[in-house]
Length: 379
Ligand SMILES: Cc1cc2nc3c(=O)[nH]c(=O)nc-3n(C[C@H](O)[C@H](O)[C@H](O)COP(=O)(O)OP(=O)(O)OC[C@H]3O[C@@H](n4cnc5c(N)ncnc54)[C@H](O)[C@@H]3O)c2cc1C
Image 1 (cartoon, rainbow, N blue to C red):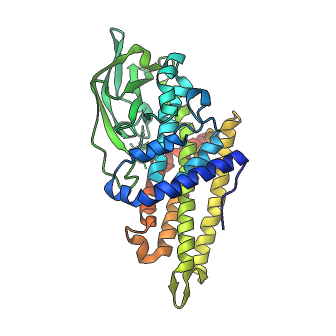
Image 2 (cartoon, rainbow, N blue to C red; image 1 turned 135 degrees about the vertical axis):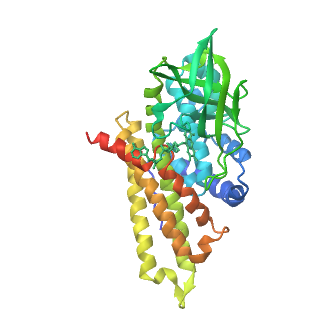
Image 3 (tube, rainbow, N blue to C red; image 1 turned 30 degrees about the vertical axis):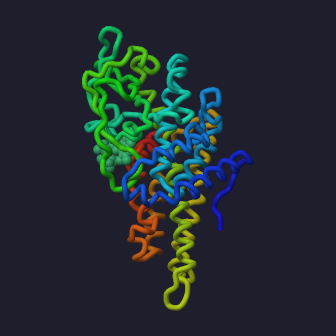
């Protein structure tokens, strides 16, 4: 049984390409990368060569020129095998590259966009701080103008992709005045910009997550992204788009967990027959299959609305909330179907189970999604 459906030949071809990459190159090393907590720079470069690091960016900007639906399909396929890798691609694309594509001047695009969209360098987005998580507007990092340069002081927490050997830049939110937040680009290698060692995590162990510090860090005044004081509005727009990719990630994880559970249920025998012949197991799989189908429709609809230039924030939050919770449920039920073997490291479902939790936290917690959805309901 396959749960996938395709919207056009182009989407089907992309799904095939990404699936071949994920199954052929990612699957054989995913467990090892997770155990070693190693960032797979060589695989990111291989994905870049396939055009997977700039899927929804225009070809004129170095990207692959696909739509958001195609991008969601690609993230879904990567997450079906390894969500650590999928978040590396999704954070780079939606959070690292999009701010420059959407808000950058022609000069800024000429300087950075081609490298990012083609995957020659990785981009990161630094919003979260120790004291500013769900309350992202509580940013304490400051940037003041001095002699034609921004002088940045502060820190950012839990930032994806900022410290890898491929990392090129981070866009950070900073206070540029008492009631003013702006986005500023800081290139890797700038004096006064440091990244911690990779943080030790429960899941997503082969993705790169670090704390960043800025100490008297000076960047040219021209690194300001868009008009001064627009940082708050800009990051809300970035997060809305990012939620579609994280929702696609949850969908892919649920699909992967479902397939593992189904295959195990057919092959594992107890009481002289496959465990898939017991109704208790069948019902688990039937429930996940139903929810995955619903999730796919939610995710593709959010992506399609964005592609149509229509309002999509509400749908993206709904998709993100639903798929985050579904990924946790699906991984839990699939692990249950695996019995004790599911608890062992050599079965990928144990990695999926650990990885799934973060989907209820990152890019806005479940509670924050519910706040956004409630606001959309006029409450
Ligand atoms: C692996 C990983 C990668 C990440 N990558 C990035 C990145 O690349 N860039 C970046 O900027 N950030 C990144 N983050 C940060 C992430 O977005 C935050 O962790 C998240 O927004 C939650 O913030 P917090 O951790 O400070 O939790 P808090 O905001 O402290 O929340 C704690 C709890 O309180 C709840 N809560 C808070 N406020 C309310 C409220 N008003 N009503 C109800 N409940 C509430 C929350 O839902 C949560 O359950 C990453 C996080 C992780 C774990």
